[in-house]
Length: 438
Ligand SMILES: Cc1cc2nc3c(=O)[nH]c(=O)nc-3n(C[C@H](O)[C@H](O)[C@H](O)COP(=O)(O)OP(=O)(O)OC[C@H]3O[C@@H](n4cnc5c(N)ncnc54)[C@H](O)[C@@H]3O)c2cc1C
Image (cartoon, rainbow, N blue to C red; front, side):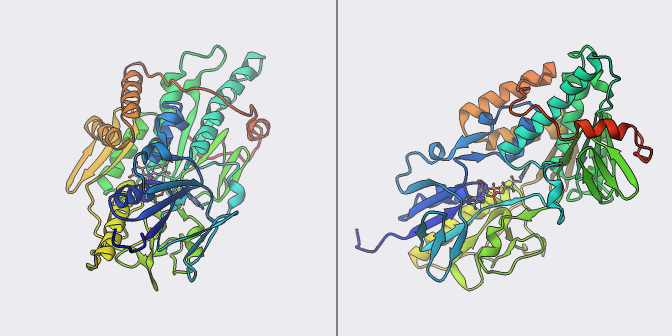
């Protein structure tokens, strides 16, 4: 020992960015405190599989303590960070303060309701395990309530599932919900025909998956239509009600509305006092530190950084992972007295899944669609999933449902009421209802 105090690094958030920063920093002579408001790391790219009853929560999430086990310089704390005092180098939790020499804020982002937070209970988004379970509950319950109604002599209620937002999450939800209605549930009900369910994807912009090249967007739209999804582009949602989605004068009845549009950074970003963009992301320096505070870094979805070509580093898992590791290396450089390096994002390609054997992939100039893209998506996601046990179970589940179309986690848990149900009867009889047709 050289008698120097060991620097304390506090990391807020154990998503892709924070967790990878902690794991890399554990190799250096520092003490690390990793705080998260949940006790688990969620593999968000597979949340839609929980929401659509393909996988169970434990297969896509792992306890943080278990992931970092054996690293004696990492302390894990469960708690919600509320504020910072950068002058005093302090992180504030409801019941205590934590001092730091270095602070890494990796609290992520969520979906934005464009100033209409009142839509949230009517149209849940997908960000956490809890969100996924709520979506699963609503979707499965809609079929059960329709069956009960028809079994007691009523007509089959028209089930419309409306997904707002044609980004990767909206696309994967729409494609998989369509498969559930057309395949997994097709022969299981006596009084209703699940195949009559309409899955409607609404995208405000001119094309779905706008961050992908145009040919891949078009291919994704064709693949979705092939799965039975109705895709509407330039469809700007202006209102969400209990059993309807409004687009100007168009009124679309909806038994379940899901929200997959917009990005809102964690409110913690604003608490740092650094400049932010319109989505609340912190405008960071090229080394991911914030202006005026070399000891404070913001990484992952909460950070806004343009790469060398002036493009915003995308809010995706590989970017957060790379930023976590890069920040750990820069802290190590500080300790060794060598200059920091600016962050450089290495884009290894992008993949979006659409449904069974349907996906798109871009690896540089190579664009792939369909089965091969889907296989690449599958293996990339298996590779990055944490824990050998989870990888094995997910592989088996996927293989099983590929051949049987079964969705094994079809449990309705919690409340058995649907916010839209009573309103839906009234919607059926409205004179000004939808003009969107199949
Ligand atoms: C449904 C969905 C699908 C996605 N699919 C893909 C995909 O296929 N490929 C891809 O590359 N990316 C995908 N992404 C994006 C990817 O998941 C994110 O880019 C990535 O998770 C960002 O990592 P992060 O560490 O910045 O934040 P996150 O992973 O979101 O982690 C943030 C952490 O901070 C914690 N936290 C937040 N606030 C506080 C607080 N106040 N106190 C304590 N803890 C707090 C949270 O609990 C969370 O654990 C998807 C995202 C979603 C939501």
